[in-house]
Length: 432
Image 1 (tube, rainbow, N blue to C red):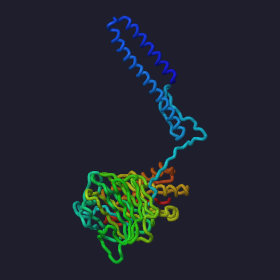
Image 2 (image 1 turned 90 degrees about the vertical axis):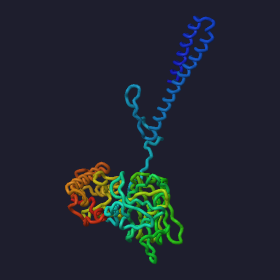
Image 3 (image 1 turned 30 degrees about the vertical axis):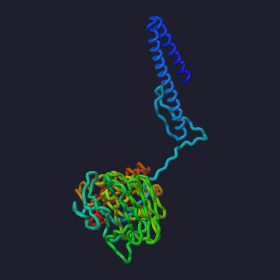
Image 4 (image 1 turned 120 degrees about the horizontal axis):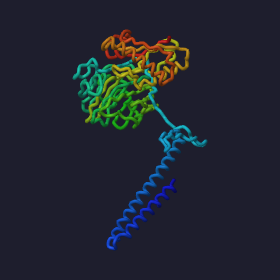
């Protein structure tokens, strides 16, 4: 190909020069020199154009070969049309070349349990008020925002802390989730803390830099994540990650899985940090708070939920015949299964694959908010979405699953508090 292009280039140049010489012979001596210079410039320009075109062709050919080589090495297939209108196909890879591209995934692998230990969405607080079950040494108020539904605590105090005033009783293995909207000035980040209250100095509002006798800080910065496990008279146990930091002026869903001393954080469909020894031994968390050390930022939080973790899915579904899960989640008034449901769905799929004769009924439940008829329809569509996800993503035979919507008709708790309403929003699987 290169030889043909070069030969054509010389032929074209020869023709141009021959025509030019005939034209020059017809001119008078006075104009010959100027015309000669003009022709030489045009010949030089044309030569450069032809040469550039030839080089472009050569480069294109080299690039094409490089892509073909890459296709053989990585397993990617090129599908550009060739000159005959057909499709290029991948050549057989040589025996000493890898045929599969190395890939890695870190999807949601946590599985929330069947108990809700805490839930707060500020739905019982009036817009403009400070939430009733929280305390602060700064200012804050419940608001609505234009980019997300529900009510949000706007933490607009300078260097302030926001403490939940009631004691908790958290097990060794639990999952914390909440939604966060950083404002446009968000930089140094918001800090979420779990800690163990001092036995000799109980406080419902602890504004110390490191509250309680021991605890865990999670810093959600604009550029990175930082964790600090601490205990009185001990050094920090730290973790750090720059992957998928929080995004300003967007709704961020943050997930923190505490499993004894291990801490895992998830954000934007991936695990962003995993520290196996991030907490001091023997710490029993019974308090929590948010704190902000960025004087220019006033973020928003809501939908704070704490659940048990890692239920025995097989025992619940196969032995007991009924599995209640809060790990399959949906947006408000929608039926699409959210990405953080992956771990729960996978655990259910694994059990069904290991027990091929088993058939199940998937039942969706809602709380009592809204219209009864619409809640019934929403719960039915959610159950159907769970079935479709198991079929599409985990290859479970659709004939093994039935679906049903129960709406608000079978509550497991009174619909009188945000926490009880959260318990009623659930998915059940019943062995048939």
